Image 1 (cartoon, rainbow, N blue to C red):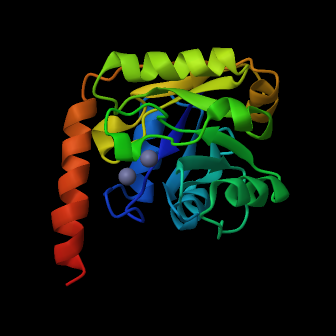
Image 2: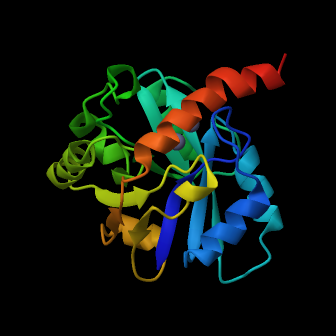
Length: 216
Ligand SMILES: [Zn+2]
Ligand SMILES: [Zn+2]
């Protein structure tokens, strides 16, 4: 199975993707499933799920929560996550039976990094995003992979798509069911960061300029 586990819709201020476009491109790229993970909301995921009529294509309800210590990915949740304190957010996701991954823990920009010792919370989370296609430098992903190994956490790969050309540029490979594969740490993260800086720059303008103009 090949899943892209980090995709933003237009419900994120920095992204433009429509649910219809996401499904079309994800299938064209040969993905078997995706997780829709908008910033601090499951609205986008619910929209994509509603639109998906293909039983062989899984759409996971997710969200990327901005906690006080950095971003956290939540998967298989059913309600909005209200907490913003890292440890409370972990509890809230677990209470909903969700899975937790730390996305892009070692981004070059210090304010976008994960600012809590991962080994301290390793037993309470499930995975590390060991490959994110929007990184600027390969060592950002290499460090993430290493921390996953050191903490014995599952590795996931994802595009962190904000634009159509991002979708499927990184992905998670596994056999059978994703939840099982993550629990057994039998997932593989792969992808490319070649267009990562372009997507990052576009996302910055989208958030700073276009989103603000639209909301005037
Ligand atoms: Zn974003
Ligand atoms: Zn993201």
